[in-house]
Length: 293
Ligand SMILES: Nc1nc2c(ncn2[C@@H]2O[C@H](COP(=O)(O)OP(=O)(O)OP(=O)(O)O)[C@@H](O)[C@H]2O)c(=O)[nH]1
Ligand SMILES: [Mg+2]
Image 1 (cartoon, rainbow, N blue to C red):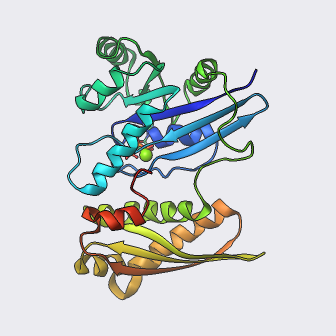
Image 2 (image 1 turned 60 degrees about the horizontal axis):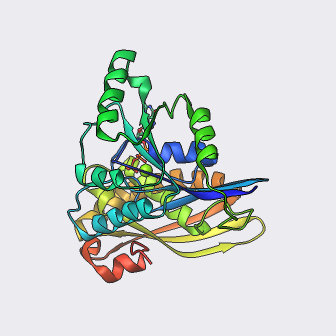
């Protein structure tokens, strides 16, 4: 018997969805930072064994949209509700229990099995956790609750076992050697965005998009030319920094990780370009891959 299906991870921002996805897949496919809205896309990570193909999806954290980019991010998260064979609704011990009730209502209406992961239990104690479990049981009665700590790897094996048990019988959806639905250059843009999220403050990371213009691979070297898109002229100066110091540092950090990802030497070029108000422009959002097909 061969099993295959979509196991989709959804939940509010910053609860640890990407951290869990990377653990389950065993590769750093999704970027992780302590800032909310780190993930902007639906990213698939695929695990293949002799008799199984699990297609995990990491999704953007749920939020009430303030601009079109965020509307599209929410569309990605909602699309993951529609095609889940197993839904992982992720929360943590820190967030307010009833945050984004509108989304939870949609989760409640799903007929697919739901694993409700309460993450970051390393930050809690037994009594607090029991309290959370009781509250969640009332809020989402059909879900199976799995307390977990992604950073400590606590209960990840158990979660994996439950996912495998719940996976439906089906032929595979992707090639049996595929690890993701994304092309190599996507991971380049994500790694650079991660460094931008880590390095710059406030609105800057949220106003940035990264585009790979050229990606040339030879036997020894990958040459990559990228564009850092910002919304306003003033942001361009901040990204570049005094004497180009800021962008140099970010570039160096990103290059190191990109080299690790491809296990090859990388030559990375970064240019900054202003696309006024790109986060609200449909044609640009489409070009940058934020529209559902
Ligand atoms: N203490 C603790 N921190 C965790 C745990 N899992 C993840 N984190 C941290 O929580 C923060 C957010 O993790 P992410 O995996 O980026 O969260 P996310 O849900 O993907 O966030 P968005 O993409 O913004 O929606 C990071 O700083 C992680 O290191 C955990 O089990 N315990
Ligand atoms: Mg994420």
